[in-house]
Structures are given as C-alpha cells and as structure tokens.
Amino acid sequence: MEIFWYIIIATVLGIFFVLDGYDFGTGIIHLFFAKKEKDKEVITKSAGLFWDSNEVWLVAAGGMLFMAFPTFYASVFSGFYLPLIIVLWLIIFRAIGLEFRSQFKYQMWKDIWDVSFGVSSLLLALFFGIALGNIVRGVNLGGVENGVSVYEGHYFFLPLWDSSFSPLTEHPGVIDWFTIIIGLISVVTLAIHGANWIILKTNSSINLKLKGVIFKLNIVLTILTIFSVAVWQIVNPDSLNNFVDKPYLLVFPMLYFTGLVGLFFIKKIKKEVHAFWLSTLLILGGITSSLASLFPVILPSINDAHEPLTIYNTAAPEYGLSVAFIWGIIGIILVVIYAIIQKRLKGGKVDKMDYGH
Image (cartoon, rainbow, N blue to C red):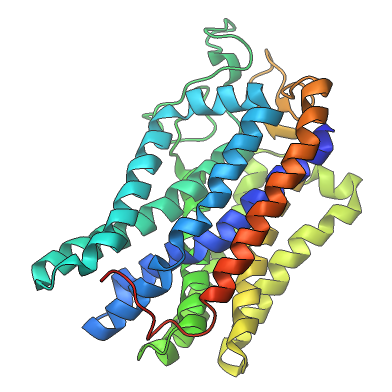
C-alpha cells in the first residue's frame, strides 16, 4: 500500500505543477513581457479563469500526504516552517492580484496588482524549485551537532540560509547555491510552460514574440540542467545510483529530455497544443526523475546518526492505508470529473470570456 499511495501522491503533485505551473509561468511572462493593457488583461484572464480549480490538486496532495505518510508530513511541515509561511503569503498575494485587478479602472490600482501577480508567481516558482532542491540534497535529520541529536530522528529545522551559503555544511539552510540552481531551473521551466499556455489560450499580440522567448529560455534551461547534474554529483555522489541499478527508471529523464529537445523546434511547431505538451513533459520528467533518483527515500539525511525518511518508515499503519484506499479512489475520481468539466466549460481561447468584472 505504501508504494500505491506514493505513486498516487506523486501523480497528484505532478498534475498540480503542470496545471498551476502554467499559472506561475503566466505571471512571470506577464511581469516581464506584457506591455499593452489589452495584453495584460487577456494574459491575466488566462490564469485567473483557472487558478482556483488548479490549486484543488495541491489541497488534495496535502490531505493524502497527511493520511498516508504522517511522519513525513509532520517532519517537513515543521522543518520547512519558514519557507512554507512565505509560500502561503505568496499564494495569497498572487490570488488577490488576479481577483482585485479589474475591480477598479484606475491605472495605478491595476499596476499594483499586476506587480503582485507577477512577483508572487516568480517567487512561487523559485521557492517550489528550492523546495525540490532541499529534498534531493537532504537535511540534517535530528539536528545533529557534534554527534549529538537536538531533536528526534525524524525532525529537523532549517534557517532560510546559513552564513556559508553551502549545501555541504553540517547545518545547511533552505537557500544555498545548490537549491538556488534548482530554483532557477523551476523558474525557467515554468516561464516556458506559461508562455506556451498564453499562446494556446489567447490571441495576445506578443504570442509570436513568445516563441522566440521560449527558444532562448530553452537554451538557458539546457545549460542549467547540465550544470545542475554536474553539481548534484558534488552534493550527493550517489544521486544517480538508482538509474544504474534500475535502468527502467531512465524513462523519466527521457521524458524531460524529450520536452527539452522538442522545444528547440518551437518556431516550427504548427499546433499550439503540441508545444504545451512538450513543456508538460519538462515538468513531469523533472519531478519524476528527482523522485526516481531517491526512491524509496523521500527525505535524505545528511548525517550518519539517523536514517533517511522513506515511504516505509513514515507510512501510516496498514489498516489506515487500506481503509483510505476506497475513499481515496472516490475522491480522485470526483476531482478528475471536476477538472474535466471546468476545462471543457472554458475550452478554446479566453479573449472574449468574462473575468474579474
């Protein structure tokens, strides 16, 4: 049952980052490239019509994580308390930026909420990437200092950053040079995804320009990807062992590189949805590759005093997982039906749809 719930939660999280990921990316594109008021309105609309339904997947993932892996849930929600509070505030300001923008026609009012939407989206993409960087890097479980544990073996606490700003120190912070690299990869990936979403859902005047932006960002992403794999070997020399021992796991990096290579042909892709699917592969391939490199570990320990957290030593009792099985399936079916209906009702271009009035 542990593997079943691990796959389900990973799938739900993957769906969240694909769906809400284009909202984050739309905000980034809106911040840097939308200059005309008409473009700002329609780009805001392409995110505003969908953001609330997309975040249902985050709520679902959090609930299932609490149910299936309560020890892991307790560990990361206490250890990452500071960045989680920051993420919460960013989600709030992104949402109110979308919802408040069109309430008044004063330009200064619109400008304030445009900045709120854009900056919050950018920082959310960065912080979610940094979170993934912390997961693959590992944390000081138990808060070991000079061989003595400050906390129980499955607890930890991280400052936002350590004075050394290094992932190799005994007490790394949430933000260091390695997690910043992963954060930048997240920002670039979601900006590409958001640009593809804008092209797919709007007739914005910058759509043609965005294809050139995607091509340039893809070059940056390729460089960052190669660099991150190299430095990952410094941070965790065993990071690729799973792919050597279980070659079938290479399917996940292949998804990522399929999307990466395919987007170099963005200017030749005729169907807008095909480009969107390529950036979807980027997101899914990146997340699943990271998880596959760790499996069955879900939070590595950077000290030898405590074992890493795995899907087995953090799982709820078998009885609880079994009882939740049927209700979980029912819940997932309902969420999928909800998502399908919502997407069908808002299919096609959004330019003439009502929002925020």
